[in-house]
Image (tube, rainbow, N blue to C red):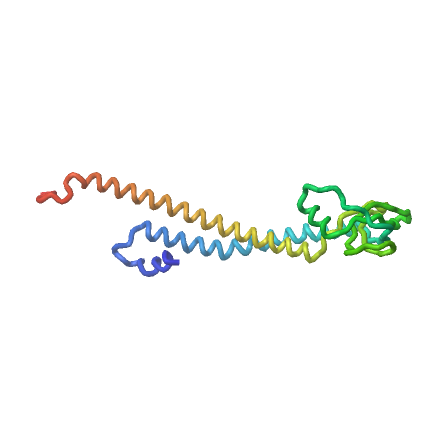
Length: 201
């Protein structure tokens, strides 16, 4: 912002260097790019992610069926699982032996995780299966899919802002290095005679 302010103040200043003007114009261009492309790319990515995730939700709902299972008896703790995600899910549920009827009408029995604090024989709970009664993971719900899409959009917008700013800083850094190199060359030419009486006479 300081460089943009300088663009206005220094436009007729005799001490203004060309690099000052270029740096100010680059700052202005970077801000315009950030204001335009950041939200645009975020919206495009978020919309695409939302469409893909909602389609995934619809496919999962078409493939899965929610059935009611009945607890036969509570089982012991399952073997340790090294995966932290499944481990945390396991800790929040109890393993039971349950009966359920598949969507195709076949009777099923198996060991499942029930979302019951203290499961007792005869308790009912929801279970997701395919048409033949094989257990499936709970489908992603539409609200969670939307949250993921929004986060993807924000992430894409932030990445765009970061790339634009990184590009601007890289160009300014190279300009400053070139400026210092020119100063070094000028000092090398003036160095031997600097401060001597009668220099240049």
